[in-house]
Image 1 (cartoon, rainbow, N blue to C red):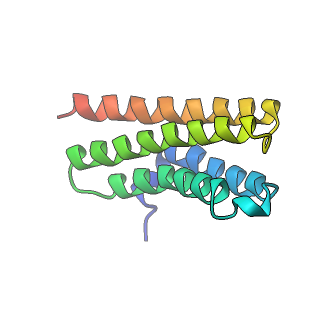
Image 2: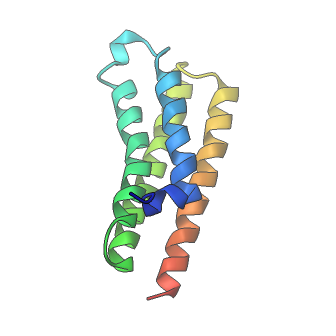
Amino acid sequence: MPDKPHKNLDAWKLSFEFVKDIYFITESFPSSEKFGLTSQLRRASVSIPTNIAEGAGRKSKKEFINFLSIALGSVSEVDTLLLLSRDLKFLEPELTGELLIKLDVIGKLIFGLMKSLRSQL
């Protein structure tokens, strides 16, 4: 079976790796946050590559753009959750900055992909 189309997208590759970073990092969050910030941050970060993958598997570019838009919304959600985690002292400022830089790159890749797909409509 050939590789799925999303596996060739840099936005998917980087966001997939980012999710693993988030899972590793949230292991150190307080146990009282298991169903709070830990869960929310993990779910929001997972939403990024999964929506890219689902969109890439759709039949139309318009559907793909819609799923990319959802992924971009999750990028904004993760951004907010990282800042909150930093302010609550669950994350060091330096680590937060590194994660936000990675997230910004992912967001730009998603936006660029959306722009490219729109130009093909």
